Every structure is written in C-alpha cells, then in structure tokens.
Length: 67
Image (tube, rainbow, N blue to C red; front, side, top):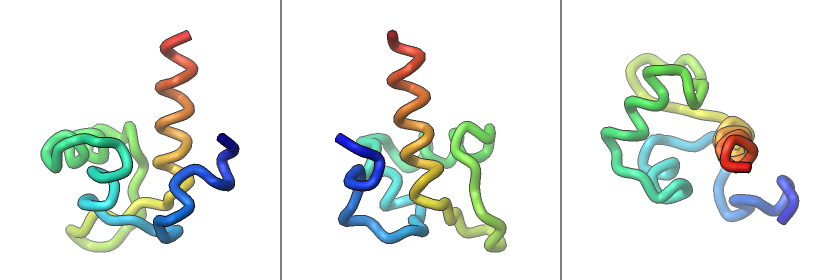
C-alpha cells in the first residue's frame, strides 16, 4: 500500500475521533500520543487537529520499529 492510498477516505486534516478510527485506538490514547508529541498536532486552540501525513508517518514509524 502506498502512502498516497493509505487513509485515502480521510481529509488532509483530521480530528481526534478520526485518528481513533484510523489507528483503532481509544480517544484517551490518541490524546496521550498527541500530548507526548508522538503524533504532531497543528495549532487550533484546544482542538486536536493533525495533518493526515503525520498519522501516516506514525504508522510507518511503528511498522519500521517492529522490524
């Protein structure tokens, strides 16, 4: 699967709920990952907004670490 087709049904900027769907994680876990900088966020007040490419980078990094 190429990075261009990974999560193709999601917009370029995603919120916490969408990240939960994409990664199969709970809301608190996603918030923790964002807070810790594991998934970099975009400034938007208290809302979690993340560029989809950052979620893709997180998935690829996790896959690389598993090898």
